[in-house]
Length: 268
View 1 (cartoon, rainbow, N blue to C red):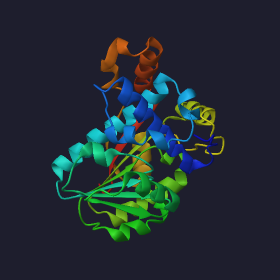
View 2 (cartoon, helix red, strand yellow; view 1 turned 60 degrees about the vertical axis):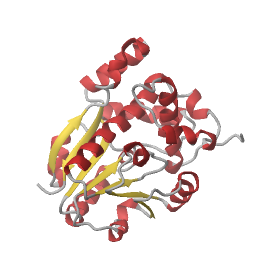
View 3 (cartoon, rainbow, N blue to C red; view 1 turned 180 degrees about the horizontal axis):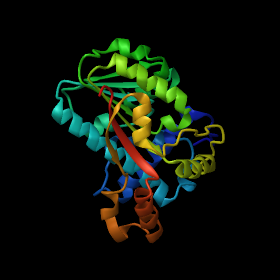
């Protein structure tokens, strides 16, 4: 396959995909993503995998695992609902969840949506929408009165806090029965993550948003904080199948809240 230089934020979609493939092959008892495995031929080169440690792959997949649990819980409580993935990239949550009753929406930039449709197709209760997630025009294409879970995975880090706060305040108005789930790291973790993304060959996609006080951030957005979850509770059960270094990193990442998934109720 041709050598390929990763450039810009959109190309970082290959990082979590590479991680899901790696973990699905090595630890299928913990996490298995058949659809991600089918996309392996589309990954340009092996720069990401060569520059990703076991811990970094596990961190990406553990985030997906936690978000999967949130989606399943939400759908259990709200069978007739929307699940909206903002900055969807090549995320394959829809296929892992396997729900055919709710309404799934994948939002991303036009070139990403085009690539997604080409390699993944469109599910029977799934809709792909091309556009800027911050402009919110995508909301016009769904029933916003339904209970709605908005998921932002691996995306907010690339933007500034004021942009994110404004977006969440707008979501509050558009989705009266809405919840938001997003991953984040604290300010110390943000420095580490920036170094990792640059090491994979992408020197253009800097990260800016880290969160040291989830409760204070929820208050700033006018939302109600429902939960803050660490990444690695389930992953640590793999025990000695993981390297000692990975286990130590995972343990302290959760203990020090370096890695988090934040869940909010948009309207208190």
